Length: 326
Ligand code: XMP
Image (cartoon, helix red, strand yellow):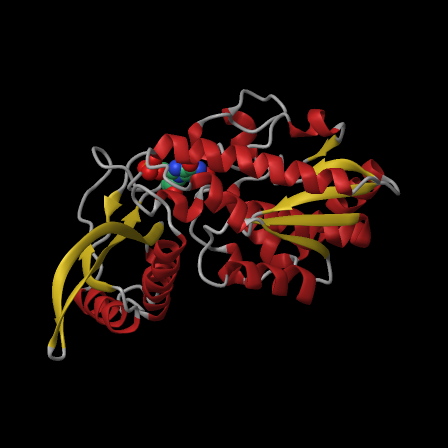
């Protein structure tokens, strides 16, 4: 609308004035904040922006392809796609403790990002999708909140290490304003209204040791669940169950159980489905999804994902359970 249009004009003018003819790097995660920041900065300075997208091998199905299609394909932004999955999975081999997994993923992410940033020798700025609630939580300081919650994407300290100035064009915006800005900048509503996805990604949704074959199974099961949530409309509200939930995903349980398929016996892994409703993610209720949706999802997962023969639905609220299983 008109108001958002003039907001974009002002924001673009401010970025141009700040940056001049210097070059900017931005870490693109596929999440809402970094995507909107990238689209806005690209609108302002075009090819002076280089986005770095690190694939740690723990992303959802087709995530890397979607990010590249959107930013490199449709927006014609410069995007460096770093496939670091082997490096990450190598470092994670044999590690089962959730917090150690998080630390390894976080540290590796910083390392890979820094190495890419150093290659872009002309860059003078590091852009981040910090939004107003991040600023408030960190007591008005310049870096994002340094807690486990966003440890992975918290690149606080990075600008100094890299000798870069910090560009944070979303610092004054609330989440709903960031989303409206994203839509006004032409990002697809499906991308702008996505559920949050944790920095360590599937790393905290594969219980215990992370293995590539587990990640591959989980990605496929998770994609089926999300597709069914998006396609099932609640007649009362006219909204999809994806829109009616705050976060939903599949979790891989490295446990085998017996099943039967045709004339044979199977002995395969289990997937748990998790869907919650919450306003602040501090407390959350498990979502009362329609049985028909659960039935279709479990049927599809078991039929389409060979290696999974059992699906369960998590009926635990937070507290005492957490939203993620690790
Ligand atoms: P829990 O599991 O603590 O999750 O109830 C609350 C919210 O935080 C997200 N979460 C994370 N996000 N890095 C992130 O960026 C993490 O290590 C992490 N752990 C949990 C979780 O997805 C939920 O939205």
